[in-house]
Length: 448
Image 1 (cartoon, rainbow, N blue to C red):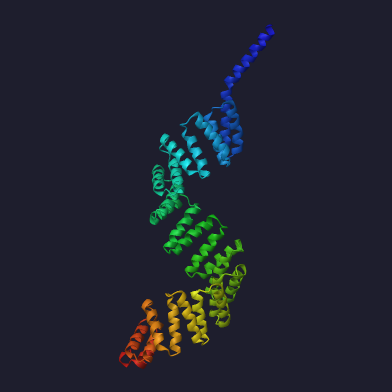
Image 2: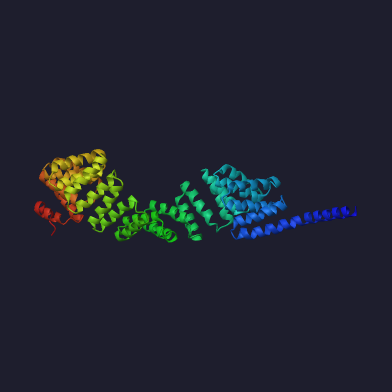
């Protein structure tokens, strides 16, 4: 009997010791879990948080850290279960409300994220991160005015919050405040020079302002951060092309193609760069490569025709233009250029028909009026030519050769006064040949 009493007492003592030790065991496992959590070893941290929770099921801090570790591992379902469990224990746990809002955010359930963030802010109002995610969620719902207010608060609370400036820049752009937007992107980049998205968004502003050098500088930074960013090389090459830096553009398109040999647009633009450098045969090779990838690409046939024109290979230019027009029968530029090619072959009547078609599809394509006027003039149809010259020069006032040619047509219908006025204007615009015409037809206006 005494033995049983002793055994029961021993068990009781052991149980008491166990229950006394449980909180300490839980705390020890929690602290070990924290070490792994802070070392970004989240799965190992979860193993210890599991043990901590076994010994203390109501441990909010162990549940919170396990929920955050699950979140870092993209195990959102497990994370949500732990956040819910914490909030059942303590509905005013702002960390759990914030954590659960992030899970909702990741699941694109922005309304629920906003509800939790508002609750968290009502408990703890001075945390910039809460206001940032509230503004971010609002902006994803296109509630830009509310988003702006929240992001303003976030930046007021933390003036070095790069992500908040970045997101506010996006919001301001959506509200039409482009100047304010780019200022925020500038600040975001100042605070975080590795913010690729901020560079890319700022580039859009630079493009709108035709600040191509600024756009190139941003793509320099993007490429420095991501040396294999194929699109960045393409875009930088494109803007170098706009600035007629053909060598620089060629180098960028070469790199773009090296990274992605199937990028059709890089072959097309590299062809343009090579044409700009006078490497016409190489340009044609690139255009042919692009056409192999997309035989219905009428624009590249047109570009190839332009190169053939520079090579004075009129027949091949005509062939490419004919193909472009088969693919796009309302292609104004191609009709115009085919008209020019036909005029170069002395097919003036045929050229006029193409200029007619160019004007049919675009009544404001002024060069077609000029081309038709020249062909009419050569055919001695000066009244028709003058109608086209008049229309052209009413819209394009700085083409000295057009004034010279109109002057010739005016002289041919015995309008010497008008002809001499045109020759004078042509000379003012730098057309030296106009002096000969003044000497010949306008003795009173000779340049002494």
